[in-house]
Image 1 (tube, rainbow, N blue to C red):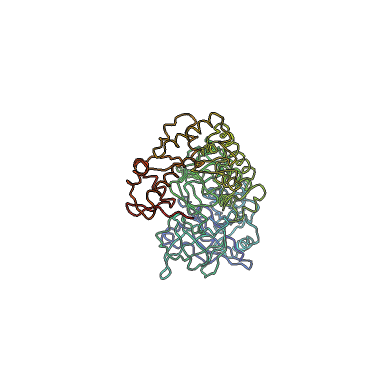
Image 2 (cartoon, rainbow, N blue to C red; image 1 turned 90 degrees about the vertical axis):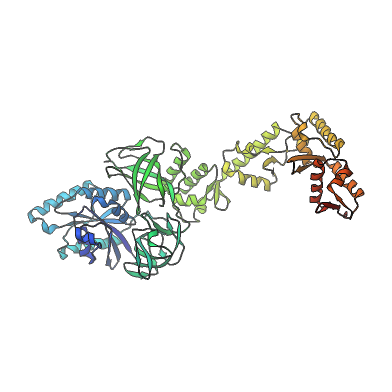
Length: 627
């Protein structure tokens, strides 16, 4: 179905609601207070049917106190019907509404000059010329300019014709990829439950699919949908829709709530934005300035953190992060109206670049480069900036969100210079090669400086490489290529051979330590007594080669080292003294080997683990030797 959504804007009491009622037969003032005061307070909804499709009309309140409702109504609108009274001409809220429309990127498609029947005929031409001239200076020109009156049906034909012509035009899209419905009304129907309404953006919405209410993060399901009072299987983007939700109480829906595709949109306290201050703003926008941000149906007080600090002067633009007091939800490309808190006037606007940004300092160059790439909407630049920010690594979902791409679409656009290194993550191919080279180079330097050390602390490579995020994947690749080994959280090149690298003095000391443990038998020395500079590394080499056996005395929380030959001799002696199935206690084994409890307990536990002995309560027996 061909549809266009137009918001009806203009100063209070310029006849917007009367014009909509005359065009559609629908009275959009539905509240008793609105009828009593003759003043629109909330949004009103109507539509005009044409052979080419349907034009949805959103009647926005004209009073300055209800600007938030007007901004909410503009969410999803593709164009505006500007209403100006022929009696009063261009008034303050006419100007304010046009400023806001400019910030939101919603351009006037039709101008209706109302109440012409109340202006003396001799004055009408001059008044119309003045209004036309004033609007032209405000950027509203070359659109249908139609004098009319809600009380003169014949004068409305031209307005209807101009509205119908909107269906033939192409309107720029600022919508997200997935379904996104900023909720402007929530109510309960007997027997139905909670119903929410809004202008649908992004993708079609029906009873199929998984949805969530954000920023609450509540999963919801759709029972049914309607548009313009008629049941529908599916409602398309740009249409007004009423959605009957299952499993949701009306009090769970708050200001700024959004019904959206699940697992895509997430609430955040921080967003990256590109800010533009209006040329006629009364003052510059300064770093750490508090403003009121209006987007969708949200109205939040935010702190503006300008990248690089300083200020943005009237007529200028800049990059910033806006920080929220509570989590809210938006989408990349969404327009934001920025208004000062006091006086409440529009200072400028912003475009959301990343609605799920990580808070950074104002001088963060990597984040600033990402914002610049987001403005350019270049997926490769965005991916490169995210990789730089992530120390070499980027998530594809982040690329797709900032580049405004459908899920699964980014990888195809990044082929060639980017590599998928894990599920959902990418790196620049040159960075991967450089990171691999960094690891090898760092370990080569370490091994050259410490030839008898078998392993290097992981910080050796972490401190050397600027691609910290890629190190786990680089390590995995080097291990698969048998170029790297990892033990106990430490790393080494597989080509590194400490035995071959040591000098004559170190070889002599190695043999001396081994002989010392051989001579000690079942009363081995404490490794801590070997205090020469290379001794700890030489002991580690003897353990790694199997010359020494390292055991742990749990009770004393001590490491005990035996020479492997001494362990073998102990096994042989126990087997001779206690041939299976004869059983023996720990004390008997200690006496048989002429040692102490400090050594016999970890030794027997080691033999248990190897299956040489089998423990049963407080006794053991030697297992029969395999032949």
